Length: 420
Image (tube, rainbow, N blue to C red; front, top):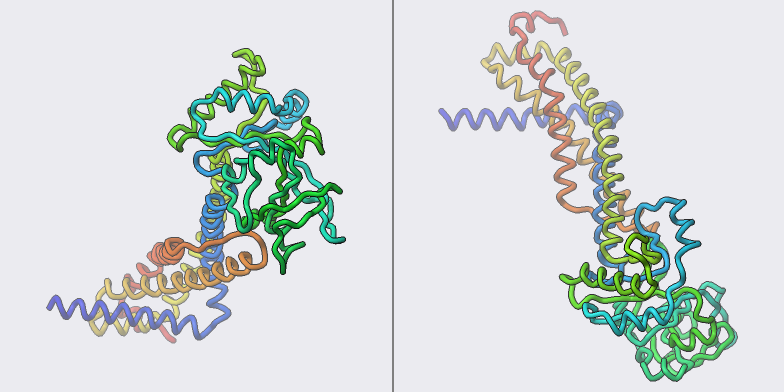
């Protein structure tokens, strides 16, 4: 007998599912409108999840080339919540980072395995009569900057400490510059013009890619002393630091902060007049942003789900009215109240799950279009698909309880008296 009951329950389940699918096929437009709320909810949920998941991978991979043990000292920190008045005050109060401060921290720090100095400006680069616009990132560097910034060599070599000491006119170029001027030839040994000044190319970097549509390969590195000779020592200097390991990152940040405050003779009650940016800064900024996105998405998804659930409930109530005689016949032939209840619950869940699958397909298409048409990464985790379809099914079950209960309570004699 238990085996017979399981067989009957299984047959009832598949029969209810088949009835639900047939109902969808009979009136496709009505079915689409019925499931629109569920489709929009699932599409929104999975699209937002795909955006956040993809951006998490993107942030970890590309946004910060400092690594988990790196940080920077800059004139002003632009990451995180900032009061516009405070930013204006810092722009007037904070002095530029000086080369003497770099030397002081380098000589006195104990928790850094490396510290480099970099100064940046924008300029024009030309070669053989071909010239770029004035938006190339010109970087004056100490010899360890490529290593500190995790930049790999594709051809040639990086700039040497000796070349920095003797103010050599040599350059290490990014992949964009290499493709622009040396697509079919070896760049090593060629002379480019940086804002009209000749520099011999000694190396080229591997491609770094882009971040939010901004290329990271549009640069020319030259010795920091050559940079100072061309552009001066007053602007654009930052310090690139690496802690001895990730576990000592915060201690290294505190040590460098203390050293720079001491060099600038800041009293304990005075705010630091410089900024510190680390990988954690990017992560914290992104976490605040994703929290806001997720909160907004939850509100939108909740509204869509409630609307979709109410529509499904109304459709199921109409189905109960239309199939009153069918219910009466089934009950007269021995169908139990539980059988009728299960049938309508399965139908309601199947309707909602169908909307969920359509929403998944729509979200996948949206993610694919955005990923290829824009520089916004979107990755669709399997868990989000399962959650989207599962949540849709649960909504169908919840809002199907009342219609299913109404159908199960019908008196078979009264139901058989109903005219078609």
